[in-house]
Length: 176
Image: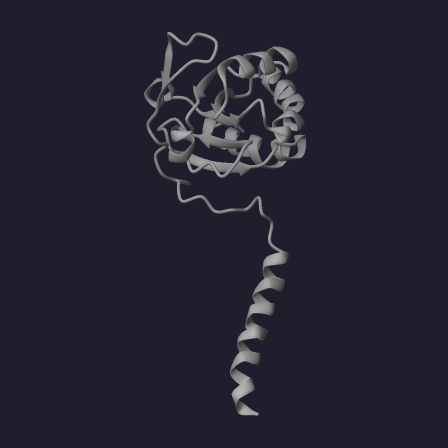
């Protein structure tokens, strides 16, 4: 009888862990990059591939970096929200086009609109890996010193903008 207690106890612990895991929000995956310098990058701009954009070019400003792709269904869901938000000009938003073909990405932006000040092309996904991208879309909030202050996993909704991102942006910009 006692020889069954250990396996039964292990089984009970596994069931308890599974039960707890089912109630966690998958969007709240902790990023080891929060409060650390944003990874360095130098990538060609999507619309003008002969021009580049780097982390250094963005120092001194608060900005959002949105990771997106033309093949991403969830990116299509968030695009109207990003388009409307870009019109407010509350913070600059840059795009990181992830593991995509340039022509497909340009066609997608033409079809759904372009909310970005500039978008860079990460065709092999190496920069996305450096940024800790789990999947697209993801949105990062970076401060003036180039430090990542927040990471949003999944499509950004209007509620996410209003309750999470904008208050953090305003705090970093020193606005009331």
